[in-house]
Image (cartoon, rainbow, N blue to C red; front, side):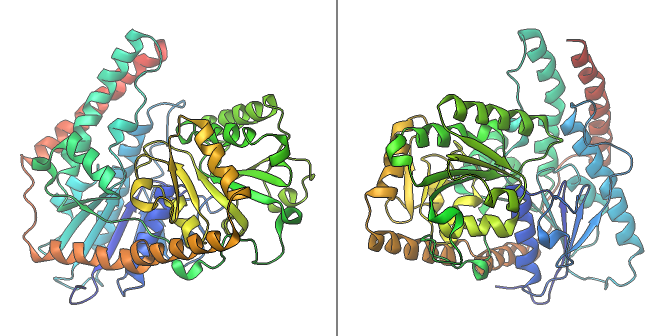
Length: 472
């Protein structure tokens, strides 16, 4: 049930790049804005040459704050500390703007939606408004489970553990200040509950990420517009160039088809790439070396023009930070979407592929278990068994009639419309907002200001400990 009148929505997100979390928060803003809510997005970083169109073309009111004192990192380290400090700086600016905003009506419903970094939530709780103000935290995954702790020797790992401890504690404590916590999948909800406990966060709801079904179209059979590369059969992987995405699986499985069955096909590995991020740069090199080592011919393109002009002999094409429009064209003409990450928290790319009517081959773990229906909209296979992935590729390329592929296309589109559309997300978010507003503010235990001060002192001490890392 929608709120009685549109609520003022303020969204806080650390970096509006082009990753899955950024796409999700943009869609949250669009879903609520389309339902009449005034929405403002605050962020500490937005590069207009490296963000989604809606974040730069005026579709959304995006304001960059908290980016003038603290850098994103220090010497390639301290990312989590800097993210917290940048968000706190942003929050000070935000609260100042709210305090001087004379257009906000007394008693107006004001909803803060925060994701990824919960550091600001206690401050919003303590200083952010009156009785009609609520804060919802959208949890993608606990940050403490994403941190790498197994690098280096045993002494370095101990130092890292000491460094991370206050941040791990702070994450759960700050999140507990939310009036409501929602997760992006049942898989994530189970992990979050296991890490922080239901007593601390309350009962978590699931709000699935969405795609704009109005921007769908196509059917996965390549009949939309001029065919790419002379009508080659495209096997497509879309993901950031990060090791945890296991893009190497797609290359190995594709190689497993053999030279004869690869003829007339092309593996396209497209996704988020930032040359400022060392992992992106190195992993792309590693993938290229893997492919060439297997005897596959490769090419790398950073523009659509160069991608369209590559030689016919190229087996594997790497597309770095592919534009949205060209990515959509690839989806329209792909025969199969390969989604390789293990235990992905949700995974928006498979939903985007199904929206375009493209069947999906994904790991039988994490979010894809909730989005893909085996044999109806795609296949779920063991990401540690390359041969299983090769077999599905072979089946789609050579073992299925077009009528069967068309049936899967229709089923995929229908599932997205019912479960993962912008409309479905907007309705679910409004239900969560209405529930928050119908209850008293969720109690925030502890002496808030004192604990906040202690948390900040802990952060400073953590920085001092972290500096020791540079000695090892």
